[in-house]
Length: 79
Image 1: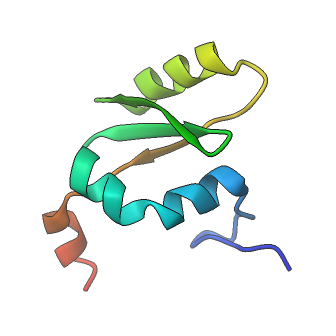
Image 2: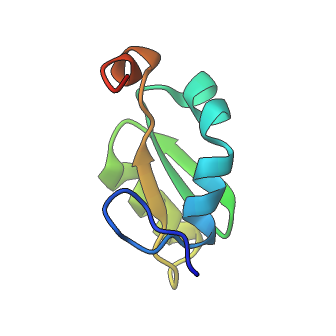
């Protein structure tokens, strides 16, 4: 059975890569947007549009997984 995210979306390999590397992403890129393509971090920036554009420039035939990496204080609200 395929893994599903919080919104019921089937998670692809890039989404699973984000889950596996989440702690590292929070440590290094808190508050930034990141884009992952083919299980590789390909772009980091201040907006989702910026990192999606960079990622599509690298791999135009694949939709990147884009995420705003939460800051630790953002996650405190979730607990």
